[in-house]
Length: 183
Image (cartoon, rainbow, N blue to C red):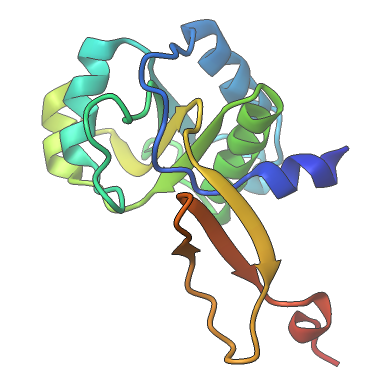
């Protein structure tokens, strides 16, 4: 069910780096995004895929992930979402829709990921020789998650900050449905 996939879809930052993601798997995930809605059907998004450890090593220094995972716990695949400026996006939400669709597809395949907006765009452009026509919008880091996460209700203090327990389980507080529906 979709709800089960959504419940498993967290922002994972630590992965079994030695569990490879096939390039064909990344292509299948991007195909899901390709088939998703696009404002005015412009289809201005383009993608760079990486499942190659050498190419991944060029990407990783140009992204900022919370906790800076050590070697061995880094993503084994990346999808870089680009805007083709010759086509131009009408709405920025297009790449959010694409990113979420890719993530949900990854979860269905037993993978997880993290959407990364904190990117050294100039460094990444140079490292991968990305033509100026393409604006780097977002990097999706993907892999087989090491982390275990538990969704729980927000406490009485209202804090939504995630936290880790002694067993390295990340607790993710979520507001109740009644708290987020207005009116």
